[in-house]
Structure formats: structure tokens, C-alpha cells
Length: 353
Image 1 (cartoon, rainbow, N blue to C red):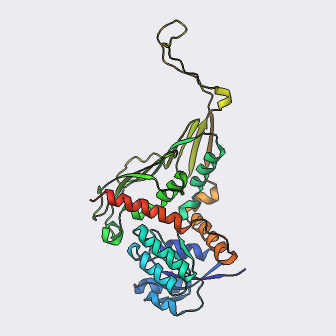
Image 2 (image 1 turned 30 degrees about the vertical axis):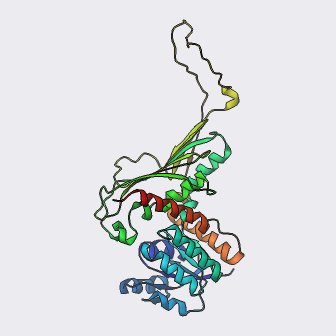
Image 3 (image 1 turned 90 degrees about the vertical axis):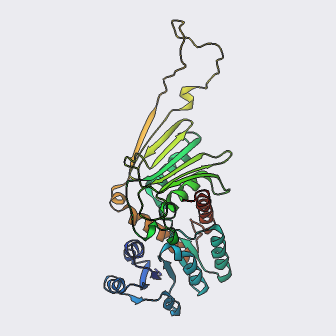
């Protein structure tokens, strides 16, 4: 089996804890041969943990001729420029999210990928979240009927004071966390067209100048309404997904889902009555019926529940392996991510904190 030789730019929470950790567990498919980081202590740790070459300047990676892929896990505000440099230097790139700040920057990256013939991939591993995939399967089965609304909530109560709370660093909940629920939301909405967007943001508990409360409503003709909430001031988070359908609904978290539905053939068709409603005593009445509900539930498989985030990352990297080695199409394309960036760009335009 061919091994993909990887270099990682950045050894912070993403570069080390997600990418290096995940790739280290996929030794048959990947080999980490080099990392780059500006902090000496991170380089020393990488030498010991990964047994690889280390560089203070990521541009020194471009002098190598043995790399199949460079992972760009630099700070958010460097993703666009460094990803562009990587492709122009002759290497495939996997960029952390957010890919860029604007849709125009994504267009530039897509054009660079086309000109250089290099792969442009974006680390949107939440597309492989088990609960999200289960929700999609339930919807596709048709049991809850036509989807009217999908609510996605990435909520908790937390105060932050690090570099990712600053606008200058492309910080804030929308760009930090938003790429995950917005990416999922657009799969529910449909990626063929841009939705209409309404957004509200607030600074609630952050020490920085970027938002830590985000509300987004996506809607369009013939499409479900999508309600996205990313809040750091929610003391009572109640669900991750809440789907409303014409014959039932789904509600649950990243580890447990419940859904219920009635069968149209058992309930019969509704017939409009325009005369006053009465009960069996000929008294005024409200229209009521007793539907027979069918209820089901899902729990994340035990092996995934223990390591859900590494599992999502490894599923993503399996996809990248099949793209680089076997020539398969990317399952998460730059054009899909462009739509996500365009949505988030419009949200920022509507809100000037």
C-alpha cells in the first residue's frame, strides 16, 4: 500500500492534537515526515513524538521533493496566503478551516489549484460526524415527510480570552466554530444555489472584539428553513439537531437521536371543514385527532463514541487518501466550501460589532 508522505505546518491545537494525532494512527496510509512551527518547544516536542524533520520556517518545506501533501494548520488568518503558496510551490494542500475570509479569496485559491494542477482540500471533518450522517439517513428514508425546518445548535457556556477572539486573527464563533454547522446546514439546504441569509451576532462573554453569539437563518423557495445557532452564552443547551417534517421529526445530540413519525396511509387524508366544529354532544370543539406515532432512537456506536473526533478525522483522511492515491473525486469540494465562506461573509456584512 502506498504511503502518503505528509508535512504539517503548525503544531498547535489543530496541527498537533488533531492532524498529527490522527495521521499517527494511520501508519499504513500516511507518514509524517516533517513539521514546521515558529515555537522552538513545539519543534522539540514534534521531534520526540513524531520522529520527523522540523523547521522554523514553513517555506523550507518547499525545498523538499519527497512530500505528497502539506497540511496547513497555521493560524486562521494565514490559511489563504499559505495555502496559495503551497500550491504555487508545487504541492497538494489540505487547509484547516476557515479556508479563507471571503468568497473572492476562495476563487483565487480554486484558480491557483486549476493553474498548478494541485489538490485543494479543506478539513471539514464534521461532514463525517456519525449523528449528522444518521440524521441525513432518516431524512432520506422519507419517514418524517418533507423537511420544513432544520435547527442546528452548537451551544455552550464559555468565556474565551485567546487569540481566536480577535477579528484581526479571523476570530469569533462564526469563523472558529461556524464552518462545521454551516457546512452541514448547506447540505440540508442544498448546494446548488445561495440561500437568502439573515444573521444576528453579539459579543457576550468574550475578552476579544469578535462575536461569541451567532444566529443565522437560511431560507429559499422550495427549501427548508435552516436555523443555525452558535452561542457561548447558552447555560442550558438542549439539542444539536432538531428537524421538523410534515409527518414527524428528529431531535438529539452528537451521541443520541430520537425520531418519531406517523404513517400517512394510517392517518388518512385531511379534509377541510368550513362549518363550525362540534363534538359528540354538539358542543363547540377544536379539531383533534389521535395519531399513531412510531418512535425510534439511535446511539452512537461504542467504538465511535469513545473517540468521535479522531474517528471523524480519520474518515476524512481516508477520503483524502482515496483522492490522492486512487484518483477519486473529493467528497467535500472547494466549490461547496466557497458557498459556506460566502454565507459567513454575508453574516459579517450584516453585523458590525
